[in-house]
Image 1 (cartoon, rainbow, N blue to C red):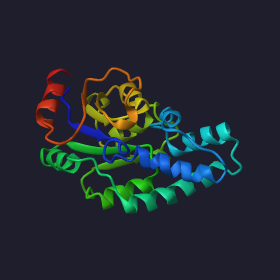
Image 2 (image 1 turned 120 degrees about the horizontal axis):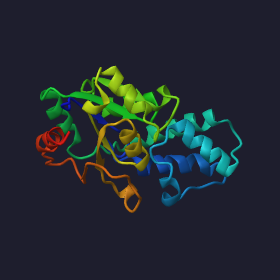
Image 3 (image 1 turned 60 degrees about the vertical axis):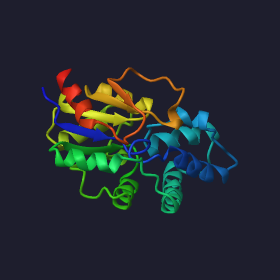
Image 4 (image 1 turned 90 degrees about the vertical axis):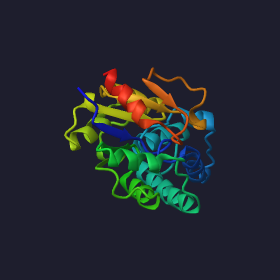
Length: 221
């Protein structure tokens, strides 16, 4: 089967936002005298908001319902991203090249849909993705493959026809579990962490020879 579809994660892939997510979480947690280090937060990378805040509520014995923290961090994130939206260098150009090349494009992110729409709109990516699947649309968070399978279903693409760009171990496990080829995007936030084996890794989208990379994917499929 030839590859026809490319699926992108958002945080850590389209935008270098993992440090901002942690800053926003710590602003929320600070109201209850709690704090997460980067190392402590690393185990949660790729989780959706429900799973993330359920885990933190148990860890820190937080006083409010999980929904309170999800909404609070969303507000903080939007404020922080308005100050600086860290679009990954080269990624918008890559998306446009893929779009013009006839690839089906999907965004599958554990973030909630409102935040995804904000990033897509303000980041110059409006109208590029054929479908979007968000963390609040699935019952099971990454590393479960549900979100990637949902994106493929919406595109009428077989999982074996999909290539996924992911940065987190949970996301990579989800892509592999969905029977999709995965390309790891290396980031500062995930350096030193253990990862499943992937087909390829990249450190930047700048000057990426995506045609050669995806043709290699096809040839080895």
